[in-house]
Image 1 (tube, one colour):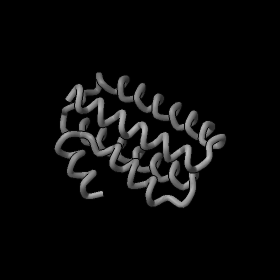
Image 2 (cartoon, helix red, strand yellow):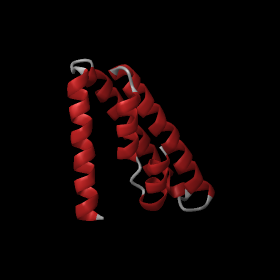
Image 3 (cartoon, one colour):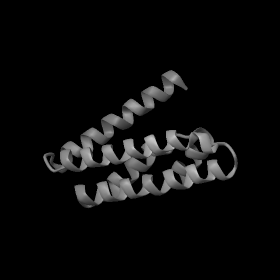
Image 4 (spheres, helix red, strand yellow):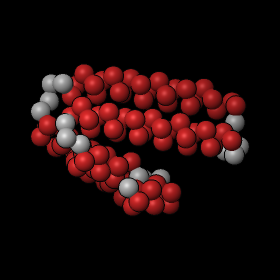
Length: 110
């Protein structure tokens, strides 16, 4: 978690590391989803609030933040439905695949 926080603060790429952390610590698919979704909800609310408080985001940006929140809620609903049809090993494989895609993206774009 310290490494994730370090990389999130420095480069904004702590998410994949937290996904891996929660994957390794969770005893079930439901526990993994609950942990990762709760973490990212709290992180998103906290970071967005700080950005508004420090003037990085303005009131005019609130609509965009709301769209992001709606996207997160839709993604949560879809994930909750999909994961019921997958076994724990397949969920792990998908998490590793998305972590790899995320790393590739950061290498190519960043």
